[in-house]
Length: 104
Image (cartoon, rainbow, N blue to C red; front, side, top):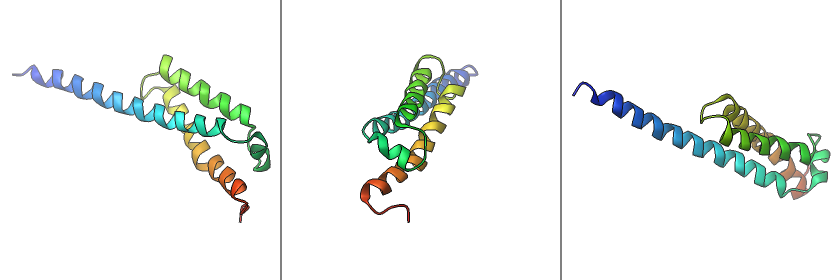
């Protein structure tokens, strides 16, 4: 009975790691797919990194998350950060630009 808690702890930790890894990969994949489907001149118009740079950053982060890092490793956290910067900063700028409303 005393040994059941460490076994249960390991199972719970593996499930939590799996959920975090899936969430991380989904966020990074959504950012990369959105980046690849946008026009290249829009990135220059909003004053951010070029499309190729964003695509390279996001793709390298996904590969490093899958191959090198675990779900809460340093490369996974950097990848989530890069994807969130893209989704919360660059994506709205591109959306405003393509809607014709401008930045105001």
